[in-house]
Image (cartoon, rainbow, N blue to C red):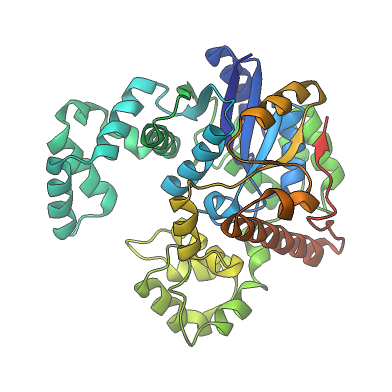
Length: 412
């Protein structure tokens, strides 16, 4: 039996995701599919539009066999951290034979070439990069010029580095190379709209376009053709009671946390540097809402997305020293199950036999099976993030999500 892994956010799950699962199994010759999925917060620093259990069910009903949660310290981080945490989780399961990811490029050889060069960072690359950064170029500009100097054979393909899924795919490949993993990588070309496309396409739009359509029209009926039938039915049932959640729903929670720590600044949080900390402290009196504050804080060298991630790290207490400690101990301490298909139970047995980390199916077992103080700290951060998300849902819709210790795993 062969198993393929997929790393995803499913924010929300749509037709392109269902296609990717089918194609991943086909190109890898796999019988089973394990998905490592972001929990209630995603890489852009936003809350997911639907909670993680709804999204896990969508994946399981449309081809996934097992869905595991990517710890929030990686799920809400930049591409390198996101990839290293997710790849480590798949690798340490001991059962994943292949990793398949979507890309605009669609050519694993080209992406691997970039990954190898960026991982080794030859003296020629480092010298050219330093010179270009010193000359005032942004990191992407300097990186591209450095690649031209150190790996001229890649120059004709530099446009690959303009597309977000290519960049993330390169980080997956770097993580596999760094680990000397036996997992074999594959890529499939993205189907339909591009990552940044904001308009709905006939049947396969980007997740961004779907989110924006739901937000602009206050309805899910216009995206019926964009998602599998079971997902649309779940959206229709949950609309207005559990979903949708948007970034500005963080507006009421964030300022108190920022005000509380304003005197000492925010340097202890993941990815926060002195310039950003000082800018937050200075501009906090101008806070009106979450998205406007992100716009106010962004600069030429700091994108809106990075600003949003940094603010989320502060809100959720994601500390730089904690992530450094986690990465020093091989990134992950457990594989937390969000759900599985009944017919995939033999896969669970194999994971339990081969995995380097425990398979966590019940929160009540965590203290017994996670034999590490840092592992428990990682789990506490995940639980805190889930409770913050539940609070957003309660504030917005009046209902309440069960706590993490009351939630039941999804079984389909």
